[in-house]
Amino acid sequence: MADSASGRSCVFCEIVKGERPAHIVLDTPDALAFLDARPLFKGHTLLVPRTHYETLPDLPAELLAPYFGHAQRLAAAMESVLGAAGSFVAMNNRISQSVPHLHVHVVPRNPKDGLRGFFWPRHKYDSDAEAADYAARLSAALADST
Image 1: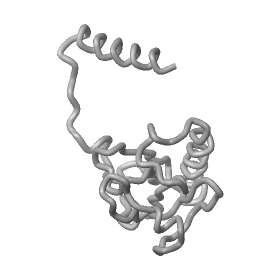
Image 2: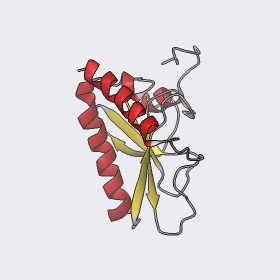
Image 3: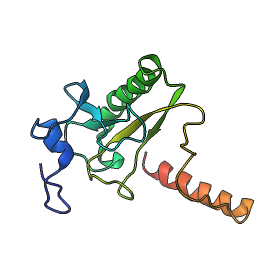
Image 4: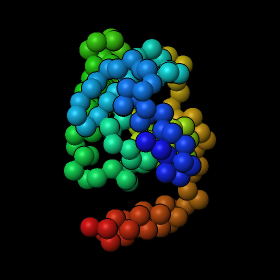
């Protein structure tokens, strides 16, 4: 399948269709998980929906529970199978999304593994009033969308 924004072929769609090799971890009718080709740590897995959706807002609501159920199972496997102390589960939407196909990173974690929180600087609110304004704006948008 082509990336609709650029017209280029989608690497993850090629993996889903078996046209590009990958180390498959999970293969279900609705999703596929495979090892990241450039892992943060061994076992770093990418979970993608079989259908091409670019971002989380594009994923149909009825697919949310099954999709994140797979992510939950992968996170548990990081601990039970790989012996990790925990996991890092993350997703980018457009910004820093190296492949424009929805995907969740599930990364095994251990104490003192060198991965430190988020990879970008933190920005504090100027005041409680500014924080309250952001919360109110987001809350209003969510109320309008239901």
